[in-house]
Amino acid sequence: MQSLKSYLNDLISRAMAEVTQSDACNANVITSSKPEFGDYQANGVMAEAKRRKTNPRELANQVVAALNSADSPLIEKLEVAGPGFINIFLSDTALLERANLALSEPQQLVPLTASPQRVAVDYSSPNLAKEMHVGHLRGTIIGDAIVRVLERLGHTVIRQNHVGDWGTQFGMLITYMQEVVGDTKGLPNALSDLEAFYRNAKDRFDSDPEFAERSRHNVVRLQSGDPEYLKVWEQFIDESLKHCEAVYDLLNVTLTREDLDAESRYNDDLKVIVEDLKAADLLTDSDGAMCVFLPEFKGKDGEPLPLIIQKTDGGYLYSTTDLAAVRLRRSWDVQRSLYVVDARQSLHFQQVFAVAKAARFAGDELSLEHVSYGTMMGKDGRPFKTRSGDTVKLAELLEEAVSRAYQLVSEKNQDLDEAQKQTIAQRVGIGAVKYADLSKNRTSDYIFDWSTMLSFEGNTAPYLLY
Image 1 (cartoon, one colour):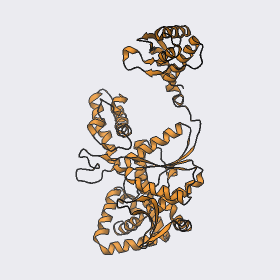
Image 2 (cartoon, helix red, strand yellow; image 1 turned 135 degrees about the vertical axis):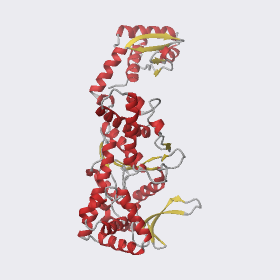
Image 3 (cartoon, rainbow, N blue to C red; image 1 turned 30 degrees about the horizontal axis):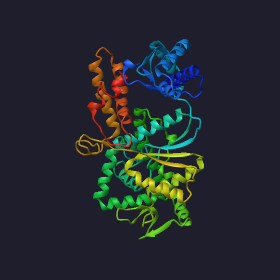
Image 4 (spheres, rainbow, N blue to C red; image 1 turned 120 degrees about the vertical axis):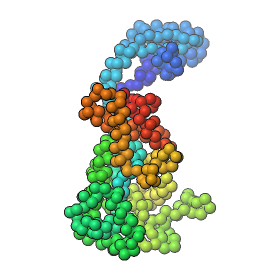
């Protein structure tokens, strides 16, 4: 469906061409600045009159006469104003018909791209074994909005949820499970509060050297492929994913388990990354750590900044896994690979992308893009926390949004039955959280404020929904 402004510009340009017997006319239709000037205004007649050295107001009257004879159903009336402006008033009836058509065929509102691409979009990406927190909100909402827009435009999108499902924390969790649960049968109940389970395990790890040593031993058994430990690890992952899925369902986010791009997927690739970087003569031994130094990255002191690939103890880092992920996506025949991640990771991604290009893990035809976003802040101007300073669980934040929306809906619409109140509260509460985020500048920090977010006035979801 052609936009109204584009349609009117074409219509009036044709009328100008008919009157002037010229093909090179542009009506230059703009949105009117004031209601008394109509819905739109064409000011291209004056430029055309100047070019022809004729009276612009007379030319405008001739164009209006030609348009009136064409009898467009969208136009209620036309007025010539000032030295030669044409004020355009649209028909409410025709606009209503057009709106109903858009509702019945929404695809017409967004024309398909003439150049469809294959695009990988990496977003949400929580660490498992812990519950999602408010820090995951923006990446999840923005990422899902991006993939929906890309798909609506006709692009093929490969969603990627790069979850952190591997690492030393799982040795700690397995050890704690052995102490407090005994076997895996009781694990689902023990993990009903995943955050508390993780916090208790971490407290034991930090305070008990013997527990910490057993945890490190259990990590080795897990990473060596011990079937018993892998089974427990898989159950941890499954329970963690259930927590994530509950959040995705609340937010109506389109990620599924089929979109998982787990960190463990790349375990066998990490040694190969190191070997390939050595073969490309990019790797440098820096005090026992294997690093890549590229000349374009320097610190404040002018010294080269490293991208660490392998630690002195032989362990790998996020950078190693990210390079393995870039290299894998090369085989997917994608033209763009988007990473929807906090702006504080900007330097990390700049370095990863540069190393990936230098090592030819990504060719020139693949665009690697960090879609950065700002931080959600509390009213104190600091990252959003609970009053006690703890990280806010995302599920609890969304539940509070629905609860607050329910109170507002109940006050505003007392005649609704309970089921209607619950349904509307769900839509308004979740919609308020998502809209408050998406309506802000993506790259800026913003203040999270319940009263503003759930207001029935201003640029808010409740106002738009009601």
